[in-house]
Image (tube, rainbow, N blue to C red; front, side, top):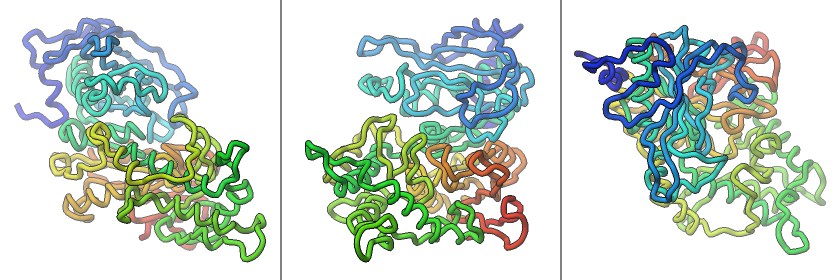
Length: 514
């Protein structure tokens, strides 16, 4: 029997002598999948309803009625005495379109998120399009950035890569059992941790999915944290001190100073793409240097002190070790570097979901880099494996996207990976047939930004590429920051450039150029 890669993992169910008969949604509670220790906790019909207000991407419209299946894989008591299992949920819509989507996680996971597939799906999530969607907690329960599960071996391994490798075939098997046939095509879409997971799928499970979308992948987390700290330490060195002698980081730059930096960046680089519109598309060609803003006399709101300019330049250049070797590639100058909403921009290193900023004024980069390179950090990372020949050989497609203003994971690091992956898989003209990277000006981590167009549909792009062979030469983006505006996001290293005529608010008036 000839099977596609994405269908292999459903055949045990379909070819079982005691084929499972699904009479309705509830009957899935009795489903057993050969080779997996699985318990279906609940299977019930969810009526049609609008997506929750907190849904990623703020999708519009109504979610269709669907059968939701909640289950657990490998229930056990951990070495720490706590209960563990790989929790998951599968949404099975009535109007199934024959496709399966794995919805990537976020942060440290720890909860099963609503399986609707809204990441990078524009205004219409995957479930509303007829996709069957699965999500997982990756093997532990926890709130926010609770890292306690890392002390338990299997829980740590599940989070790093094992859980998604088990949930994918289980999810496919449930889909096959419910609809009576396997999915025609399978996709993985995620951002941040979900972006890392999408990469893991292409690297470690190359035949599981036909296409993956990896947004702002959480690669080298310990090194990106080091680089964030490096920026803060540079600012601390020039910040005023409180009564105890500790730097007041928030006062290293005044609001006027930060506005000056962003305004000067726009003045230097905004119009390089053919139109001054408050967005920097030609980010690689932008030669902004904060040292150009140094006061020639007394400090005023229209200039920076030499120490302030040096601190910004040093921090954004990224950390290097005592040998001068790059530890992390640094950060782009972009409109979101002074952001105050959501995750703070790099020039606003205030409290974040992972804790308060450092008050250190110096750092030992060599020592911090050695700590960052811990084995557990490397084991689940997606930053180094670049050979994707098996994934590409079976027709796999891989789209990356990354906000240029992302203050947690630098878009430069995703460019680093993409460039190395391109070189290791046959050069740009070959890899562009299977993988493309899209940078999003002004966008923070996975979305948001005061001057960005962060609503785009990568799901349709990957679907068309896989099923029709139509590679995405651009992806149109819109956003709440600029009502009525649209722009093409271009495959790296190209960027959107105004054609010289036409409505400057419309994507059709722009083309992709290097």
